[in-house]
Length: 597
Image (cartoon, rainbow, N blue to C red; front, side):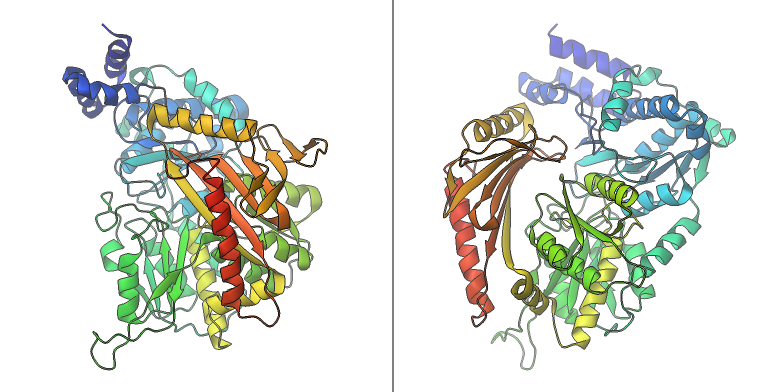
């Protein structure tokens, strides 16, 4: 018997789920061609990290299934008991879940394993957006939170996201401490778990009250900067087959927006995501149905949440285009989708230039892979700006550190992958509150005769023009992981001296914690926590960044180019010049890394 076969049989014998046991047994009986699939399932275990777990649903340790969820929850429970003792039992754990395949079942397993360890849970009785789950951890004073979701990943994925007692995602060393407890967990069939009747009789599993969503909506309403503007503007919203529709529509209505149309085909949770190839509003084609609704309703704003509603996509009309094929008098509305950087800059600028009376010593933050533009705006406005590692876990935790250490007030944070948060209502990305704030901004600008596109030009003229591009290359399986490691190794060992029209002024290796000037300067330490990221700082404040994704089998490259706008020139001309330099940098980088592979 081969080692792979033995490991698969042992896992199957210990799997509490008959469906995944049958799945493995079928693979074991299949011809050798199926052994590649089997090998991938046992290439390792899903790694528990700062995003918790995320993987393809299926049998085996390298997949998302009930066995993995049981062992993970047992490890989490033992960690909480070891670090908090009785406090873990009294405060409990919030558990939310989205509409993906097995999300409800994984949430139920989580609550029953916690109950068997004497830890109470606050379990949502229906689908919950990720920001509502994060809010509930803070609002209920829980010691931790678990959100069953794979966010914007393809339909075959699910995940297990963990929040600490501060209502932010866990960061090191908490993740490694929990992982150590998971590694020490017994085989899945031996993990103590209450039956549903036992859990009910124990009194340890509590249903999250509707009062929590009411408190969340009240808090979102409190984030408003202005009460004026045209609240009757036409808006199209889509939940993209996710769980955001009910809460987002209510939040928009309570903010006074009276003309909001939800995309009906995508309004209800559907794990099959039938109208989109990938349930990620960044992906090409994902917004097509929303745009069709926009054309029908002549929408002035099209907004989309991803399936767990922690991200927000924004699209606005381009100039009306006449078409000879349309009936007389009818116009065709075309839309331009804004990038995450553009939305982040718009929201950040709006929050900073429309301060509330009690906001002093303000703080804004963005991930290092987001455009440097917000940092420049903050500097000119005398506001503290902080750059963090990628991921809202870093933004939220660093914001809390600075609030405590320097008495700063965190007012806004964003990352270029469509993630935004205003204030501390949610210590994570929040696509629902961001939707309300961007709608408010459009309404206010409309009353002044301006659009978001015009506002972006005004900001660039005042604070500086930035253009950005992100390229993701998928590298699946064990060989893909090896390719990604090899690319990062090559970039570290042989960094280029120039990238396109730009000389490299310094090389930053975040894993080593160093910045080295290419002019022969001494190495200096950087403040960021160590991470597998390299940064090429270029002439004129431009830069290129490379990093492996933390949640997908991808390596990502980020290009940011600083341009200038002359006082008397058309903005399109200045933007075109900057984009040309950007494309030159991208093409030059292909000589270092094959971006198409």
